[in-house]
Structure formats: C-alpha cells, structure tokens
Length: 118
Length: 139
Image 1 (cartoon, each protein chain N blue to C red):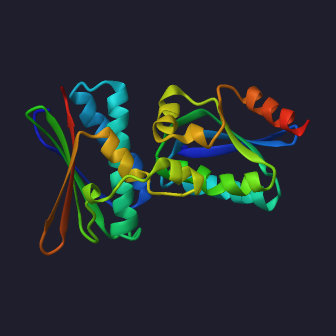
Image 2 (cartoon, chains in turn red, cyan):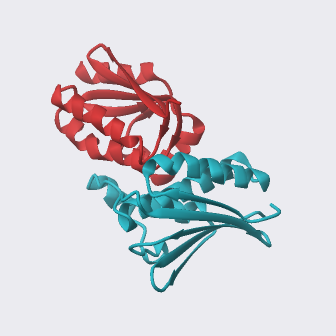
C-alpha cells in the first residue's frame, strides 16, 4: 500500500509537488525531504497540488510553516492548490489563509507566479 | 456500540494509520456524520502523535492502548500510556496572529484536539500510567 508519495514536476520554472495519500507524523518526513531538496537546488518557487491528498494532520501543516520563510526570502513562495473541502477546512480553521496563498486550481497558482515576475 | 473496543499498538508513527482506521470503525458504528468522524480521527491522531513524540521520545518499545466506549451520549476514547505526562487542558492555545507572524512550527496538535472534541480528561496513576480521554457527544 502506498501510504504517501510525492510526484514532482517542473512547469515554467516552478516546481510542482503533487501529494498523494495521507500526510501525518510518519509520512511528513518525506515532504520535508522534498522541500530540503528544492532548497538545495535553489528552486524556491513551489506549488503544492493537494488533489490526491486524502488526509493531513498538524505534522503535515508544520512542514509548510518550516519552509515558507526560506522560500519567500529567496524571492519564491509556497502556493497551495487543489485542496478538497476536507483538507481546506483544516487549513482554514487554523488560519493558514492569512499566511499562505491557496488556489482552487494549479493553473491559477502558476499564473500568480508568472504575474509576479512581470 | 454494544461493548468496549480496544487496540494496543507500539509507539511508532507508522501505526498512526492503524489507530485512525480503528477510530473510524468505532465512530461509524455510532452513526456520526463523515465530517465529525474526520474531526475525531484527527484529534486522536494528534493525541497519539504527541504521546509518541513527547512521552515516548519515539521509542517503539513503548505501547499505547486505546479503548473506546459509549457512556450515555458520550463517545469516550481513552488513551493509556506510560512515560512523561501531559494534560492538554493545562496548555494554552497559541495566539495565531503571532504564530503566523513569527513563522512558528508545531504546537497545533493540542488546539486541534480541543477544537474537535467536546471534552478532554487527563488522569495519572502511580507508578506510571497516564490516561487521556477524548470525549465527543453524539447529540
């Protein structure tokens, strides 16, 4: 059983992390590794696509908090996209939309990155 | 729910998936709606993650016992564990404006437990038994 996997792709200089499965204290280590790798490669523009994520606990939320400052201080960002209502409710309840840009679809998030370049 | 149900797992984050499945099965039997079931699952996950991290320092030799029961209108999830104690009721929720301004990491598990459950009870028995009970009312 695949508990959690990340499929990474690059579109127009933006790294997309497609999350699949559940993100808890066990699997969030994988996401941390993915962000560490992006930092090492100086890829600071990141979109996280949640369309195939079925569950998130605070351990998963913590990963985004751990990397957002780094990404922004390097002229990048972590933009979140394609969340189910169930996942969005968790982010929303804790007030994450104050700090993070959350978009319904990945294309809009991508456009926002392109706009900020012009 | 006709009888108490119980699961005992080693204190490893890889067992969180088993814990969530167990809680889902018990909550389904009581007819909670999907949204509430998800909240209960998350609260128990957060409680057990805290125990694995802070009480057991991720030492998998420790065990966590979870017992569910229905008493009156209350669905009670009792989590028994050894090691360092913590009573979530004594921990203040963070100021979320400050939290985001200072890019804090962690500390959201207990606020989520409190938000999603009606009550949380903590008890300690000598020599080394902590009991954390998360309670959700059916009505």
